[in-house]
Image (tube, one colour):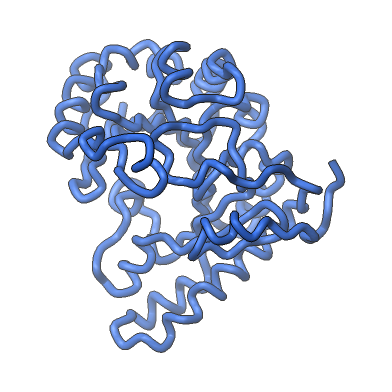
Length: 302
């Protein structure tokens, strides 16, 4: 594919209608203000990532360099008919600069609100944290390693969340914190829950092994769905393989397009997530260190 210095491909109109609130960048990237950024600007709470990891919710840039995915997970809130293809990949320099500009544009409407913390608003225009996890699978972007390096060079911390299907990119990137998101615990459950374009289970296992040797902070995020994957012992071997610094046990949230595929009863309560984490603590030697009831997530560490 041709590499561009700036985008020249406009996504389909139906796709744009499905992504209201997003600022599209170039041909395949996007920025969206996180709910918790908006709440933090009004001093109404912060994201669990601030509570767990110390980042500032109001200074976090939430973006994706790949409005596409190679899986059709039943729990995903995004529309499944994303971009049909990419005409050419935008350069990492372009994506980084334009995403920072897009964040400022999205923030511009907050200046006229009376309940906004003015200091935070000015700080928000100068993001110092990038969550590369908005929508789609970021490792499909072939210059993700360059993009992470550019954000790093700007003094920004980077969190990358991947489904682990591209181990070669997992090995190349050097973010501040690297997540592999797991819902499946076997090849069979992978086919049922993640509905991949092809069988990626071996690639996921490779990514978990790579994770164990990364120099950055590492996280396994377990997205928990009642009736499908809430048996802690099923994940013990995978967690031992990846040896992450942190484990997030987090409830599936009954939001967006996932509501067409799962009943609300598939969303566990925080008490159920906590019970899962307590059993995982017993089985693995990891210890529960923190939790956020509103986000239905429990953090375990070595």
